[in-house]
Image 1 (cartoon, rainbow, N blue to C red):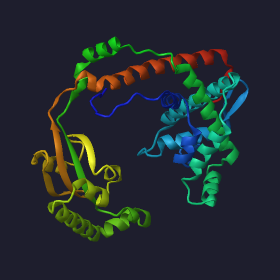
Image 2: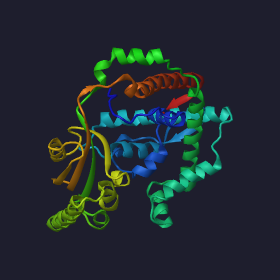
Image 3: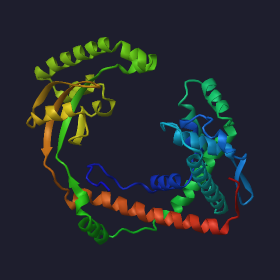
Image 4: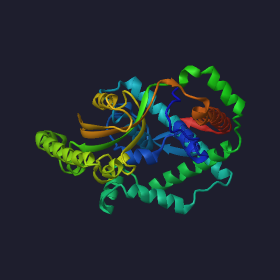
Length: 351
């Protein structure tokens, strides 16, 4: 457990319900966005119908999509035993999702057509054209109607779980305080610093869309010279006394911080490239570095504040502890609820 990051919030119930649902159930929507069908499990002889829940058949193609998503970044091959275990876990997840969908309908939970359309259009927006989107559907052997149906299942199941959790879990302050005292070692915060930076990327963002990695590497020297020239020009403006934050907004290639004037919030040593840590270690609050080179490009860093290693004060981590305890109780409650649904259901597994 780590509780020392500065920005922690209590999760909204709807978000929490989604996280719990996705941890217990497969997600065709995610699979559609992230994966293509592949032949990694062709040797498993998965039947067309992998399970039946209260008479409703669950198709194997959804299981294959989820398998592809889960394994697409794995290096090396999985053996048959490993593949079988993963597929069975996915089948179980699909069973849970269908169970919750059916129970949601029984309790008159519905997914608003407008919300279904919004989710559907959000997926389409990830493609340049309608034709490209339709081709993606074809590659996955999915129809638009099937995709919308999966969105409906997801929303209904999410709403059901939301209602099961909402207002049913109490986290007294005394429980939060006790957890803090019992686990104080987990609240140790390493030395940190708060800084702003201006970043000149080694490769311009548009180059990633135009060229392959091999082509980028072939022109690395040219891109490096361009980035160095850019950062040196910015440094001259910094040294002339211009506002650092405004220059970051105007020039920085770091999309995550440029709109905030380059503010990186508190950073723990070792999170960024060592060259950044080294440059910061030579600064006093308010001072600005020269040009700092990293494998990603060039930086100018302004140190605003330092914070020594310490145990985080209770008030700094109170919300994070509440979130942790709430999630643990909510997960238990969700699992108990799913177990109850299973007992009442007629479930047949074919893999």
